[in-house]
Image 1 (tube, rainbow, N blue to C red):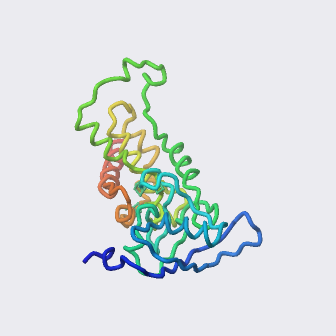
Image 2: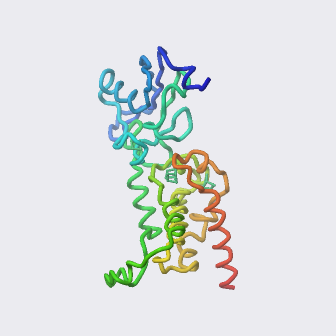
Image 3: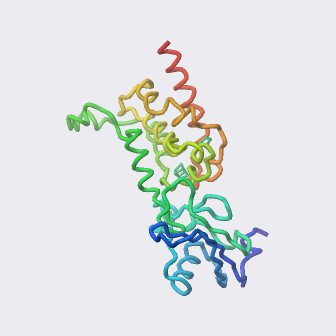
Amino acid sequence: MTEAAKNAGARELEFAILRHNPADPDSVPREQVFTLHEAAGMTLFIALNELRQHQDASLQFDFVCRAGICGSCGMLINGRPGLACRTLTADLPRRIQLAPLPGFELIGDLSVNTGKWMRGMSERLETWVHDQALEQLDIDALEQPMEPEQAEAIYELERCIECGCCVGACGSAMMHEDFVGAVGLNQIARFRLDPRDKREDADYYALVGDESGVFGCMTLLGCEDVCPKDLPLATQIAFLRRRMTAAVIARG
Ligand code: SF4
Ligand code: F3S
Ligand code: FES
């Protein structure tokens, strides 16, 4: 019998939620415990909305799509980063601890500013196609057919929803504020695959060839363990590291 099937039915769930409002000078981080009757098919999204609607209107958390697409509901669920909208309470024990994802600016309670972090990372790594034809708006030169295998390989990495779970699970990201995380390295791997991006390995090396990039990763693998999109992060990082090392050797 699955964990979900075993737990299905009437449980009195206990939610221990880390509360803190950094905008309020009187706020002190604390754990607040709520109880809630479990319903069939209940997700953390449903549970948190019930709590906010009926028990505490000040509870802060983020959701947009409720379908594992927008990446806004990442949080620590019993100590493990995950998407609240895709997590069934039936798969969890009766006591559920929720905390904000570490590594991001706290907005309040379970809400963190992943958008600001992702934008900073994206600007720093220049995660867009670099091509003169694009700068000159030469659409004919840009609109070249691509081999289906190549498009599929790019699409595989493009499935990232920028939820931040890989950052929240990464010891290197906790130690080095400027580490671009598996999400950033995945972006570099994605653009390296794109034939429209005319950057060379030396250009990528300038962006991630240091401790804030590929050489800051300690191969802890937490990123791949928690990625809700099952992206092959460890393989991509190892490949990039080999390419960046080769770029250094080639430079002499
Ligand atoms: Fe989320 Fe995975 Fe993208 Fe990291 S790589 S931000 S865990 S989808
Ligand atoms: Fe962090 Fe993943 Fe590397 S968890 S240390 S980015 S393998
Ligand atoms: Fe969009 Fe969870 S609400 S991924």
